[in-house]
Amino acid sequence: MKSITIQGTKRESVGKKSTKALRDAELVPCVVYGGGEPLNFSALEKAFKGLVYTPEAHTVSIEVDGQVIPAVLQDIQFHPITDKIIHADFYRLSDDKPVVMEVPVRLTGRSKGVVAGGVLRQSFRKLKVKAIPANLPDEVVVDITSLKIGNKLYVGGLKAEGYTFMHPDNAVVVAVKMSRNAAKGGAMADDDDEEVATEVEGAAPATEEAAAE
Image (cartoon, rainbow, N blue to C red; front, side, top):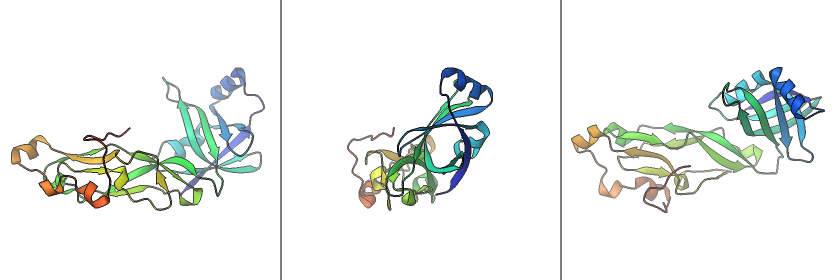
């Protein structure tokens, strides 16, 4: 997985006044958890551009007073009006300790149902995965070629090598719904193919309409 570097300065004071002063100076108060005592530091807001405003997933190398800390972003807070970053939490990475993070979902192929006039509905743009740092994927690739109108692809039907998904098996990742044009044309999935994603991939939905988060 790609990594970006954020350079910061250790915070000696963490009170409200110092926090406000940092934000007024366009600095973001941050905390790194894991591996002992939390580390409080601040970083320029613009340093987060390549981490937050991108569809890609990244780990982070935090450089504070000559110390380099590998980490992942765990939580980030934005101002409700200005949308400026006002706080960020990171978690320190260890080579042998699993970590949870979100990675983007990339759809490949051309759905048979969409070709027939159906509408593709993607419930997840990102999925939470758990793995040791070396096994964190850059993305989750989902092939939708076999999906016909009425078909759904579940989390339990996705392949995961070296990592696990932190979602129920019956959570729907993508589905092909009937559109008005397809309904007028009489395009429907064959009865044998109604749950092709389930039968082929082995996902077992617990309910008729398994929902995503």
